[in-house]
Image (cartoon, rainbow, N blue to C red; front, side):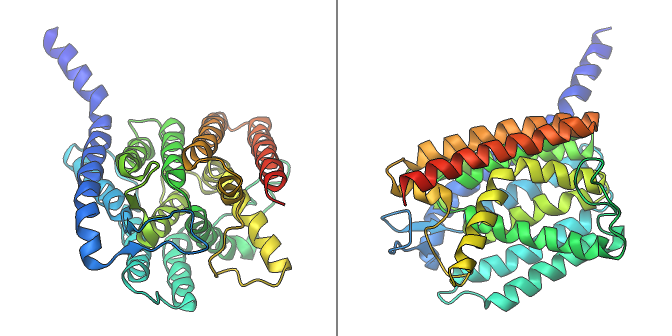
Length: 349
C-alpha cells in the first residue's frame, strides 16, 4: 500500500518538475547574465524616452528561454506529454529570438523590415500547417467562419503579439508579471498533467525566476531577445496541437488584454498624429502613469493583478467553453483597460 501511495504521489508531482527546473535555471542564468552582458556591451542606456535613469543590462530574456528549453528536456526525460508540434514551435521561437538578439547586440539594431519579415515567416511556419484560425476568435454568435482569411489572420495575430509585447516591455517588472499570469492561465486551462498545463507552469516559473532581478529597481531587462521570443511563444501556442486554435487565441488574447489593448490604443493614437510607430516613445498608458509619479512597482503590480484576474477568467472560460463566460472575459478586459486609460490620460494630459 505504501508503494502504491508513493507511486501516486510521484505521478501527481511529476508535472511540476519542469516548472521547478525552469525556475532554478532562469534565476541562476539571470544572475550570470547580469555580470556577462555588460562585457558584451549589451546595456540599455537611459535617454529622454527611457523610464530608467541608469544603464541596465539587456538580454535577460535569454535566461527565460534557457529555463523553458531545459524544462522541455526535463519533461521529455520524465515521459510527460509534449505538444504535438513542439519542434516547429521551439525552432520558430529561436528564430525570433535570434533577430531580437541582433537588436540587443547592435547599436543600430536589425532593420525594421527584416524584423517584420522574420516575425511573419516564423508565424507562417507555425500557423500555416494547421490551417490558421477557422473561425473568428470571438464568442458565439460572432464566431463567424474565416475561410480564406484563416491563415493570414492567424499569421497577423502572431506577428502583432510579438511586437505588442515588445512595445509593452518598458518598465521594471511589467512584462514578467504578465508572462507569469499567462503561464498560470495555460496551466489551469490545459491541466497540469497535459502538455499545455506543465508548459504553462514552466513558462510562469521561468518568468518568475527572471523577475527576481527585473523587479524595481531592475538589474536586468528582457531585451528584444526575450520580449519578442516570449510574445511569439505565447501567440503561437494555440497552433501547436495542444489547444483548439480559436479558443486558444481567445484564451491568450484575454490573458494579454491589458498589454494588447494598451499597445493598440497607443499605436492608433500615434499614427493619427503622424508619428512613426517603430520610433521610441513614452506614450503608453503604463508609461504615462510612471511619468505622473507612480513607481514602476506600483504600475507593474496593478497591471499584474489585472492580468491575473483576466487569466483566471480566461482559463475557466476555456475549460467550460460557454459563450457567456468568454463575453465576461472580454467585458472585464475592457473595463480594466478603460479604467487604466482614464487614470493614465487624466494624470498626463
